[in-house]
Image (cartoon, rainbow, N blue to C red; front, top):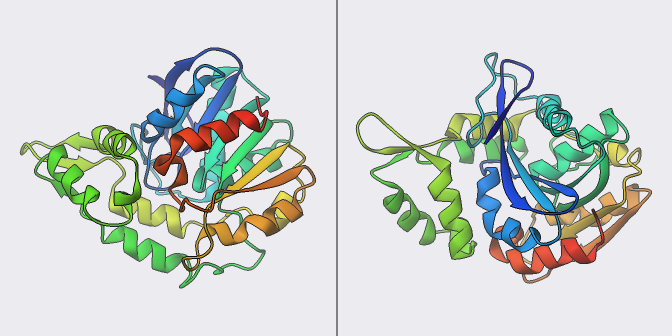
Length: 277
């Protein structure tokens, strides 16, 4: 694991996930971490040298010492990692938060990204509060998450038996739990991404908008899952592609918002087929 200094006193953890070829950087969703995507990375290492970062307050990275969770801070995390890898421009895979942050980083510093494959990136219309119930609803849900378990086995059993994480492929769920908790002094385990930090990420300001996407020229695939089960970030997909000057839409109608962890084989095949890298 490599450690990279970012802004706000943050130290970002960067994981070398193996492989050969051009670098591909995995950027995770809110509440997850890079190693949650190990099953996806395993499908990509014959095509890319895969790296993954943990955004601030997620995984093995530290939280900002000033409680700054503005999206510009996440974009600074990403830019500092790319600079440390000396890999600009770099190809990226971004999921949800990771896709939105990657687009923001490219907008702030054109030429950062060589190409991009985003699964349901958070890129919103220009008006704040477009998420059902507003960002506060998702934030409050995150804040209520159970923080500790007697063991990782207990956490795995709970997550495997209830939505939404029961939708993950078994090895993806195992990777999320195995690397997403730290031991406590009393022998229990605690989430590395604390509920209050996940909540702060959901509530943070500065999310990229369709106007942001309009300034991004990077060849970009926007992949979405089903839109038949009520509102999800997949709903934004067509509008994002329409805003991009060099974007294409790909639909995985058997997957949900956790698609890259539900079917890493199919999503990896799409990344390779898209020719990004």
